Length: 342
Ligand code: NAD
Image 1 (cartoon, helix red, strand yellow):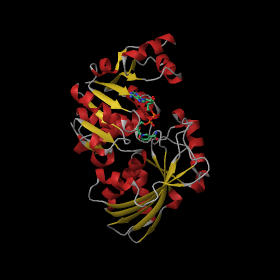
Image 2 (tube, rainbow, N blue to C red; image 1 turned 45 degrees about the vertical axis):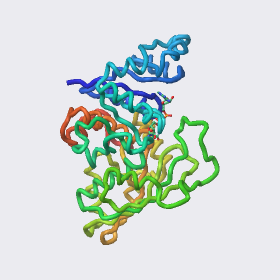
Image 3 (spheres, rainbow, N blue to C red; image 1 turned 30 degrees about the horizontal axis):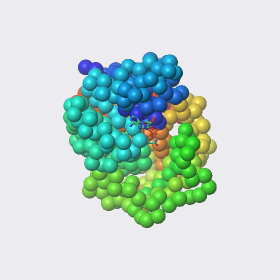
Image 4 (cartoon, rainbow, N blue to C red; image 1 turned 90 degrees about the vertical axis):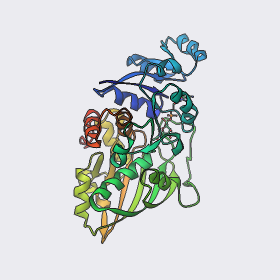
């Protein structure tokens, strides 16, 4: 069976989700919705991707530039089983009733409020609970990173509580109008930040507190995470679990010389398409275990970490695969996850 998918919004996340769908044997990318006839529209056309526009009025602007348009969002929605909404945060909610009226399944992103979908989703935590839902919300990049770590360690040792400091990138590399360019901004000035709340959308039982600052960088986020486990562990216990886990890569600074987000991205540019790193990066040397408390640094490539979960979400809502293991295997091998970064 091949599921027909449309992607509404062709920005940072939308273009990566579209390419990832293209790599799956059990899905077909019917088309994308593009609002502006810019360089990305020319690239999509050259890649043979069907281009649709939000409304009839936009068609002329595309055609004037020689970009062929196959129809409107409405046309695309009538041809697909699933829509992945990758419009800017808050815009997905405005489209929700349209998606529902078409009787198709919808995947939303973390920039939407949790109530946009039936469930907030993270493959390593709640794939089976998400099966055959009408809509899912793939949680944000920071939340996806926290959840991959927490659920992996929870399965092995039990996690009792989590405290995390999140150092956020200011903007994506392409975003020319966002800052700060010379400040560290408390985001927000009170504790907790919303990230812990978002983790609890997936793990309602978890005692978690997060705080966040924004720094002038575009490459990646960094988290300092402290977890209280149900068992006493030593560093090697954590290492062996994370090493075996899908979607997590350990970086040993001593061996690789990598001790910054800049060096991770530089390594990825050499060996990964677009320099993307959809895996959660855990700095091996930072892992410290004392009794049942574990502390570490991790890094998150915000532009690509949620892409595998979007692909799994399509399989979950359509019931293409019924187990997390199965979809992880398919998604991760098609995207080349855990291939060497150095
Ligand atoms: P983006 O701005 O890069 O892309 C959004 C695209 O949607 C743009 O191409 C824009 O022109 C288009 N668009 C705007 N209004 C539209 C409309 N009404 N109809 C159709 N298309 C429209 O945004 P992004 O970074 O890809 O974020 C998309 C979603 O993913 C947000 O919810 C965001 O919070 C979430 N997310 C972003 C990141 C990240 O770091 N970029 C990471 C994880 C999740």
